[in-house]
Image 1 (cartoon, rainbow, N blue to C red):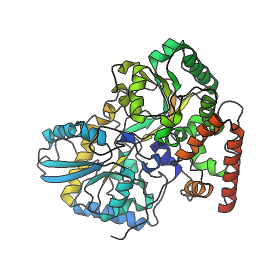
Image 2 (cartoon, rainbow, N blue to C red):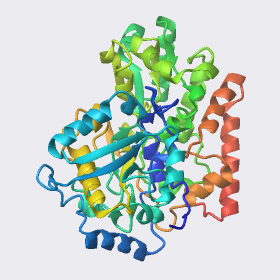
Image 3 (tube, one colour):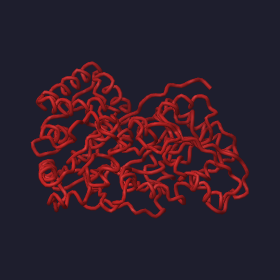
Image 4 (tube, one colour):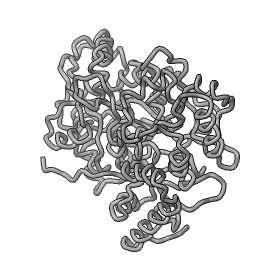
Length: 484
């Protein structure tokens, strides 16, 4: 197969991916779980294929070969006598090591005893998956790395149409091409603020903050009344900066579901101060102010991702900015799981708080696998989504629309950042590349620079001016019309 271009996609799906849960930061055989680059978790929900023929050919091939769609599989009844071996490639090295995935497969085999599932947990998954993808023989199921939506039919089998799949799963349009669904998330993520309930109580914080000012007051109370670190930045890990903070861009901070993917690139001053504690300005100023007011760790350059899990469980940390995927990890890191809480991000727009939710990595089935392996893979994916309970075990926002869930996020409206306008699917990528700002596209270094600037006493307004100038220059260079 000719190697096709594999590139980063637009903001819509990268938004959700900044929520992504983690695999190992060391090796595939160590029980660690760092999040991979947020930019490598999802594809642009609105991107379209170069030609409809490619998509139609893939769909027609599946139909002609007799491979069932997702909707056509009835779990526990169909294909129970199918005998084959399939391979599943993933990034969850922690769950590979602790036996979780093996236990799930054992449960699957109680229903489908003749489908053998081999697994491979991979460190540095985002890069490795992209390297293996064009080889065609990487296995039968993988978590889809960042590929252009136009290339989805080249590598993956469609599960069915987006319209059809929307009856079964949330985020059916996240890996979309010409109306077909090529990926299903293994879990969903919502964006908010992780906190320790016992620390808040000891600090005298009785009401969860809903604005930046209220959050600063709460952090100061933690500093004044406890020994806990008010806000742990996780600066040294890198991905915990841009990948997480950028995840609040859009509807959470503006109340406008179209802002992120349709208006951002066309806005003259997207980082301007709205004067009411909303927008991108207020979002990043929270981090700046926390550093400037000494409400973070003593030495941000020495933060420890693995160590922070036990620290917040023990009450040594008050808050951390992480996606909801982190809740299960922090609960499991010590003897105080009930102390771990998750709150909406403290920005209120016209009296209302918002949260966005989206899929983490998604299951993709190899379009080049044999018919029987594609069928077995379809069965396995559907079982994992609807019967395994893995999503709920990880504390994820639900993927299946029928499986039980314990996810609760009270007091907010869960919204989605709507996809890019037709013909503008790649504009955000182009803006990020030209401006070198990489907003919500793995811009860890930019968010780290906020910490560095605040620590050095550089005014926040200087950072905002630099971003605005780079943004405007990129708009001019790319000929992007400024509408707002």
